[in-house]
Image (cartoon, rainbow, N blue to C red):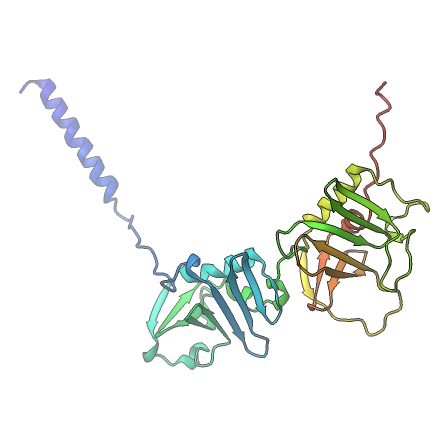
Length: 312
């Protein structure tokens, strides 16, 4: 063979050697994926039940319209919170032991602090190990060790599982009754009429929510549409349990929303306007905490844009 052939052969051998080194480089090991906590998938789950010591059980059910909280409250569920819980199905198990050979009391698994049922699969949550802070979970006859990111969600109050949306479904609004102002939707679109009545039936044509300097802001089509859109998209920052005041000093201000179709009206009471807007639904036992500027955006017509003085 001539020198060029020897050169090509040498280069080929060198390339093969480098490939072998790259694949079998000393000190680099391919790690197998960790086994999952269950054989379930998030999409397969249709019911979740969380039982907690000295706290009310929480039950969630998947319906055609989405997830719904059925115990202890009956309201649409917070989709983000539910989806984060569904990650339990595929949570990585960092270690596994046969439960029959363990002292379950040592791991606080003989009587778990929390039991979670995903469809028909039950998980018991025990103590954490001291090194990595991972939590012991009993699934069937196996004790698993998983990252402790789910436990705080499982001990959260029931109201944290409630949807942050003020409207319970996709049906569009047809009427918004505020203190001093009522918006109605018909074939021509949205319109506004002053003089809605408060909870005691008194006329409130100069309701405090919609009066500036003793005059109602002009109900232009843009202003009315903007207010209606604010209500359609309204989201709370937080939902908490409602506790009725011991004594009611000020008159109760109410808000009534009516959606298209046969749904019953949604009635809110204004618990607070500042420093945050809090709207409660006493019959459901919850209240919605909205941003500081929500009182202006949801309870009054927006001010008209100032005219552009530079235009002719």
